[in-house]
Length: 304
Ligand code: GLN
Image (cartoon, rainbow, N blue to C red; front, side, top):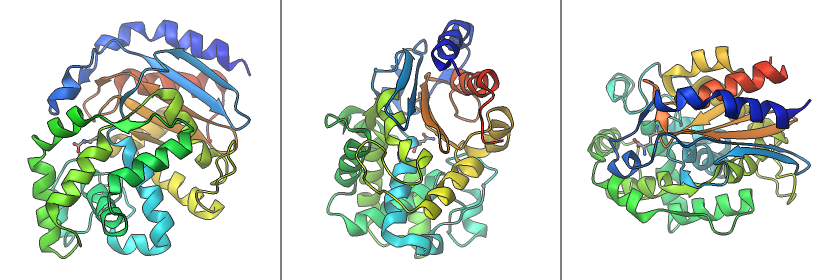
């Protein structure tokens, strides 16, 4: 399979779509990123990789952090994690509050904001600084010791986090959070503000394509069965309430973020990350989803 050629073709054909999405500006620092960026990195378990465009440019990982936070919480709690957070698609926007009252403050899944706040609460109760644990984890998974969070993005998000704060207080009232709301929101904003490139993120997600082991370092992140389960959650919940359409078009487990990044894995083969800051109405990268659709269509490789 000539992946180099496929990625070059995607890079060439994607240009008209780069101005069609809308950059997330509800976090003002994110609104400053030019919509015209596009990068893509595909990494194989044996270390080979193919990159195009801005694949080495760091960007705000935002909700992609929810995948790695959930991995850490799954390591710590195992199946008990699901006492705290569900594993069903929500069918609502990632920052919606509506289900929380009907469902006694238990979020539908770890990849919407409410669920991610519960996961961050788990990490805050186990680590002195949850965001430091996340940064160290991502440095190990990606092999890039320079990864960190961007304090300006974290501050910008903190100043506009009233909806997330409302969710956290609501869940706290239902007895769903152990730690103080301010501490959880602080750690959550920093974790979302971590910056990584497509190359970093594709490498960091590779353990999911490799039965839970980081192929190049040998670190076992999760056993094979929890790895399968996490990938299943990505498939059903990883791209917000557009997960059904995403799977229809792309056919891969994936996790997106409002910074415009999407990571996806083909179990047993490779991990890929695409980045383009312009978002569609669901909050997924408009060009990113199209690029992944072309990748699986042109290669004929998806999980189906
Ligand atoms: N930090 C963002 C928020 O909480 C993350 C959302 C996202 O990437 N979907 O709103």
